[in-house]
Image 1 (tube, rainbow, N blue to C red):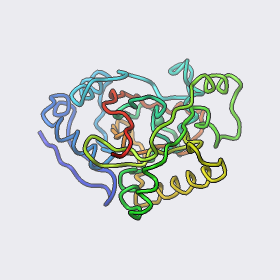
Image 2 (cartoon, rainbow, N blue to C red; image 1 turned 45 degrees about the vertical axis):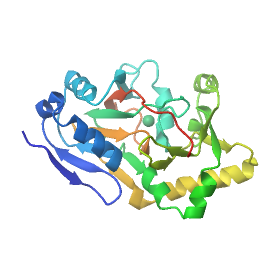
Image 3 (cartoon, helix red, strand yellow; image 1 turned 135 degrees about the vertical axis):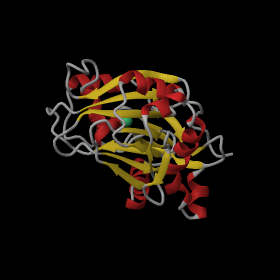
Length: 269
Ligand SMILES: [Fe+2]
């Protein structure tokens, strides 16, 4: 069966032309894991995976944190977490508040937004690697404070219920530079980063904003415009992601399978 890999830009993304049977067989799972780390995001255009095939494919890549979650503002499909999803409009790493954040996630498009709703990914390995050496050395000494509540800070308003939900999560301190088991390093930043340990708030805000701007420059970003049946996997440990605005009443729905995390956000040695 075909398995054709094409890079989508110099610094992020690859597209893989193949079929469901090839993916669920696990024949290419080691290669896919390698590509995921190297390219950050893998796009499988128009595969049309069923939920069962998606879960089976994900299992060939590693143990799962969650088999299936419906990403939607439609409460019929997402009764518990519809509003929680609003945090995804800003650049983020999923569950950076955990000791071991998820390795990655897989999404399949089920219902498209008529306009908008593209998902963007930014390569935080590449952004780190391009920094000047003295800047890298300084950043490696810092720890960031992350809160779920700050995931919503770029929204004009949120409900009292969502505020209360977000406030239940404890702040989490993580190294600003993530040293991976492979030896590579990435920036652990995003909208959820709301402070730097031991640094005045103004200075920390400035530094975090500067890093976010640096890491989301066009050369590090892949924008995926969804077509029905597309499947996308991203490396949650070496990228950030966000969704572009769309009409929240349009029924847009993506089915997500999440891979269990494998490594803590370790500080540089
Ligand atoms: Fe997310």
